[in-house]
Length: 254
Image 1 (cartoon, one colour):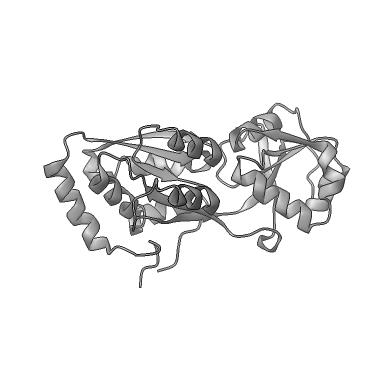
Image 2: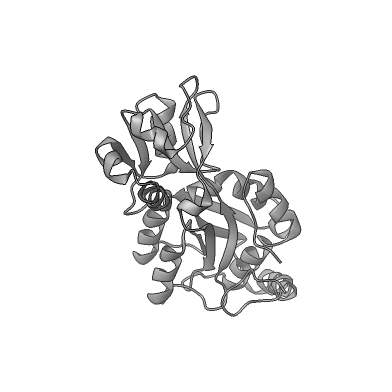
């Protein structure tokens, strides 16, 4: 049984019927997807394969907190892909999501990155010996929430607080590392970065933070709900999952 959609679930076959309906009933061959920045690479690759390339998929990538705030303020969009459940759950409680379309796109890991050539830390405890470490702002950035949780469980949060530099999203954390303005950063794998400037040196054990997932939903305000739902279902196809895996993400089990 496919467990992709929660809580109601939709069969994949319905998704392809919805595509046919959308072609006939909806005029604009374009979808707007608001998505967590760490999914930028696989989503851009996947966009070309949706609906045989007939529908253009436009993306806006940022932290989940920023995107959630835009949705609450009425930003026109069709699909939201967050990097943690609270942002989806909050919008659901506010009546902003289409019932039956909430699911999980992928999972990820939390990693430590450092400037190329820097002596690599071997665990989270090694961060305590550094001068400056960047994380996403826990108030708006899921990676920052995961990082804070991991540092707390590792017993070094108090020691690290004065050394932390908060950034608005994972890409901003990576930029600080690339420029050598901090000694290390904690981000989710898949965060865009210059590989000639920054490198992953350590993967944080999953036991130190709650599972990292990317939930998705169709927005109730979407003017193309059928096509938007079809896109959500497209993300669970074998081809889409293969792309996500290629970029280092995990996918929900069937």
